[in-house]
Length: 140
Image (cartoon, rainbow, N blue to C red; front, side, top):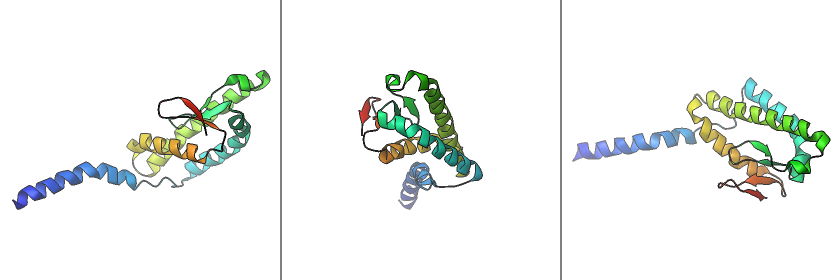
């Protein structure tokens, strides 16, 4: 009887271990690489903020950004906005990867990305656009 209870407890512990380990991830961890990415992203945010506000650029459900409505960007600025979006996505992907690595668990990258996708939407200003879980664009 005791050995059965012990086995059940061990099986339960093994099933919950990955969830408990991820719950311990430090999403605010800081390394030189993470600090550099955050600084670059903050500088770029100042350039993107007006495009978020206009609805031209939105937050995707997978933690990236996208040009949502290119018609809202003056033709002369479209190439620059596309470049900003591409650079932002490159840095976001690097940020998620670096946070996972800094936590000693590169396999957590997708979970970290999903958590940040939710955080970006929570921090978005009213009027900004984001994709819901079904992929539809909605305005905050």
